[in-house]
Length: 388
Ligand SMILES: *Cc1c(COP(=O)(O)O)cnc(C)c1O
Image (cartoon, rainbow, N blue to C red; front, side):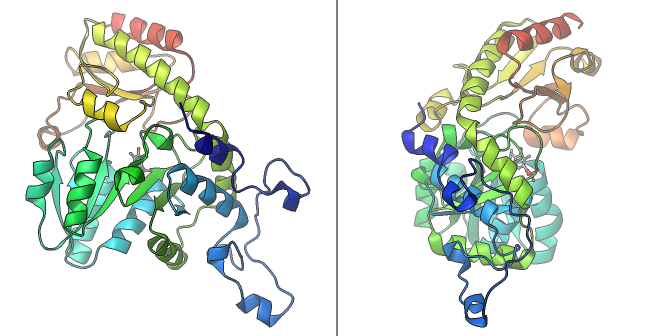
């Protein structure tokens, strides 16, 4: 059950209809600047106290969204960005310096690894150690005097490995290392990393928070008010702000986040159970199944699962292709978190190096179970699997 404060955060918190002529939804403040009666008023603006002078520094529609997100993740303040990747890059640049060492989960989101390996290594002499993340020992062994940041994802979004968040958080605190987690998969409905001691939570709002596949956006949240203020100022310098229309769409997405997540959870569990028994499937990757090697840890720190899962299809690459192409309701596409079901032959075109880095076969298909209903999805998977 979602707690009462969370339900209020998603519906009413941060909104002041009396200021907007009783409008039940807040206006989209499309203005780029605010004007003033006198010089004194202009210079008295405090952007940290919901005051506004220029849209890159702060915007009233964006502020409403930030208040809701901060409350939902049990943080002090949230700062939203033009994309999940903008949020991620902002966090890394705020924490690290030239020569920093980062420990990163091996299954973390691909573009994060590109940012580290193909940009920050060269530009800032940053070094990275990738760890599978299942054992605390791996983190402990990877720590160096110059380690400044640990980048986590739990569960990860291809093979759904889980990290002991409390364990890593307390280890990192001992060594004065900042911990960061991409919590997009679980959403704040199912997992609250800040309460487990993690320093910074990131979401791409493009996924479940938006929930309708109609916006790109990201957010950082933490309990450290001073750090968040710094991020807000740095966002003004970098300029990767979220547009007010996107903020409004994310506010609308939040209103139904709880009911959507409960439905994704129920649907996906049924789909996973169907797939696990199917003779043409080798393996199902999903933390909601007892067969998941970290099922117990997942139960300890997550209240549920969202709509993503992966399968390893039996047969050769032609079979994988035939299966995915035969799906009718699951559309072929790379994102997730929306109302719609999606399929992607994730490792189909991976080279040997990529496959061995992740210890996977080319037969991995990732599915997002949308809101079309479990039986419709199972029927679709059944007919597509019958083709191979
Ligand atoms: C999509 C995704 C991102 C990137 O989000 P954008 O809003 O597209 O920048 C980051 N992390 C995960 C796990 C994702 O799935």
